[in-house]
Amino acid sequence: MRFNVLSIPTVRNWTSREFFARCLILFTFSALLYVGLHQIFLGGPSPVWFGSSGYGQTARILVDHHLYSENGLTTTVNRPPLYPVFLAGFYAIFGPAANVAAFVAQSLIWIGLGILLVRLAVRWTGDQLVGAFAAMLYATHIEFALEALSQRETLLFTLGVALWLSSLGRTLNTRRAFMLGFACGLLLLTRPTGLVFCAVIPLIFLPWTRSMPGKIVLRTTLIAVVTAFAVTLPWHLYIWRTTGGLDLLPSSTSGENLFKGHFAEFDSVFPWIDLDDTNPMLAELTTGLNERERNTKLKTLGWSAIHADPGQAFRRSFVKIAALYSPLRTPLGEGEFEFTGHQWELTEFRLNRLHFIMLPHALLMIAGTVLFLRRWNHYDVGQRRIIAQVGLTILAVTALHALTFGETRHRLPFDLAFILATAAAMGSRWPTKTPPSAPTNSV
Image (cartoon, rainbow, N blue to C red):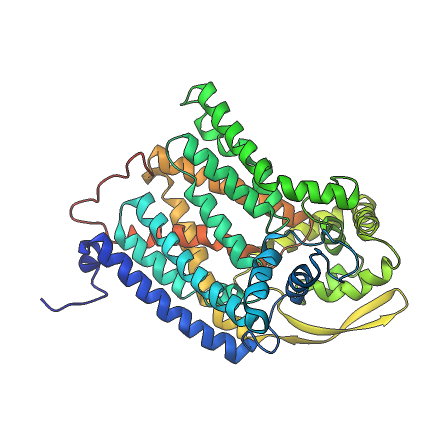
């Protein structure tokens, strides 16, 4: 019989070792391709590594001056620490070649994340074909791959989301509760959105309240909460020592993010450009203020705008949600600003045509997720619980971005869930002659 990689029966008949070996080969070749694409379109890791250069700056200062700072003079809580500390390790070990070393490390993490995603697909469905579809969707996700190789926290945050997904299952036990809390703690230490994962831990256990003894549900909830608190405690203590309070958790950007979702010119610039381009205006508004004072002022201005016109804030929330889940990458392009006193406007807007290359993949994930949810009645109780847990958390994250603002890069870590859903929907189109064995309680 002639060997055919694309043969569905062949995929389902591979041994587990053969299957994951082929997935590893696929991801390795894909990573090499994306390294080349990153070099062509974004310049690679040198001389300037595309992304948020503030992370690298903070990492260098941490290594050279043993100070968590953005300017080398004053301490900061502007960014959660995990990604700057990650980069600092490479600066300490590799010196001038640190960017290249970190770039290679992120490529390897991208490969490992793909393997973890495929393992989740196979574990939750018991079908290697679903895992194969998940592997193809992940390997062809150009948008996420280029973001993962950039100087941003997105890849580490996505890894935290994958660990969080791995903690979900059809049974409650101490190990899963510990993993859930650990993943939530890492997420908070990586991106401010991680605070949502910590806050909704009790909701994660709601699907079991009617089928499990209350003592077990309470115990696992407490284990997860205590673990998350223990993981983030050093950062909490650092914030307390630095600012004298805990109102800036998990960073000093809460006011900035709220203000960026409600300033007067919001409707004329979003989702057309990156709202980080408005930072010069924010700097002018907060001249002479320290981080805590700056955060407080911007938060006050943001809430004042909401209270002044709740209807406008409500309408804008739909724009932000649409931008967060848009199949066409947002922000849509780039532009220039003209400042006149405290008034400014967007000029010379340029649409980024590269975004259209990524559109088909996003549309496929949207369609696949819709088809997956339409098959709700085909899932067993354990699978429905997992879907409910993921859905509740994504809704909570969506609500946060509706209040602040959301762009495609904020959504990319959650594409793992959409890939899993789409792969399951695609796999259901090819039922096996002999159904795969039902997932066990280890799911």
